[in-house]
Length: 260
Ligand code: SAH
Image (cartoon, rainbow, N blue to C red; front, top):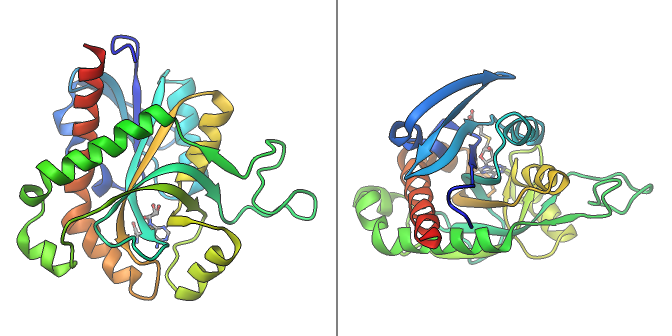
């Protein structure tokens, strides 16, 4: 990746998922577009644009298209939180998407369930290289910074011991999954879903359509069940920000290293 030629769009849905990044940005300039603040500058020496998309597939699609068309980003990273959708994926773990699907897309019988009409696809692949770097960044964050970044009290409170980095399928839809029944419906229809959230697959579709490489990382904030509303809010306040900043920083340091 030629470090001089890249411009990375960094999207999060919520303020806590992007905390600290804008503060460390050099020569930051903010432009408002379609009710979003796009902050351009350099993050650890790399041209970047940070933006909060707001929640849901439409919100993030508009934001992603604007980043590409108006701000000329060459790559997109999404950082945020998600609900766990598989046994073995726990609160505090990190999921890097290898593929994404919209669990609420259903134009059957005209098109097979989950297929995005006229693309011929239901599952969209993230950029392999960028996702590998993102997994590596997440592992480095866990190994080198996690114990310092997240207090012992908060680690105990959320029963986070040693977080695991997973790679696999993320399912997105315009629905906060907060009952075991809703989650089981998704798992009954789609295999190997690791996490559920509300934006990733929309970023994936827009990036696919514009030919822009992207990668998505999610920290697990809740178990996508009846406890979700409480876990989610507390996790966001106490932990999400530390993860997001730490992982993005490690990713940018890896990108820098790669270009040398
Ligand atoms: N109460 C929040 C609403 C957040 S919606 C507020 O007022 O701001 C949940 C956000 O976190 C979405 O951006 C989604 O991508 C992610 N998320 C975390 N856990 C989720 C779950 N169980 N189901 C769906 N999305 C989830």
